[in-house]
Length: 153
Image (cartoon, rainbow, N blue to C red; front, side, top):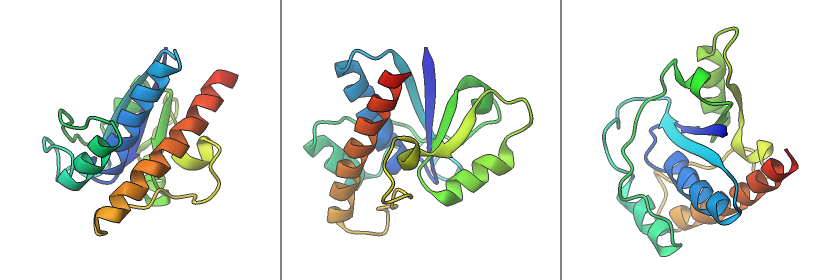
């Protein structure tokens, strides 16, 4: 079974959203993939998803109510084949923390999923409710590309 980890900064907005969208859409597509998410920073560890993201996700049919943020761990590089960063800063941190011989490969989520613009998944944290709605739409686009890639093998 393929194991994919989505990584953002605090694990309260983008990565849990993409994880939820991917779980639901891959299950609907009949794909057997394990998903998880985390943040490169640990200051939100144990907290739920941002209330604004929970509301935007809920309105689109995705559930983030049981999500609890966690920080990236060294073992994540061996637990997952792919560690997909939400933005270039997260990718730089993944590349800095990986070690030779690690199983997991790091990449930017959107380009990996065939989305070339935008390259980075914008962080909605400092934006208004519209930025969270745009995040849901972008997560849907990215996951659709992820599913295409997974179908191709």
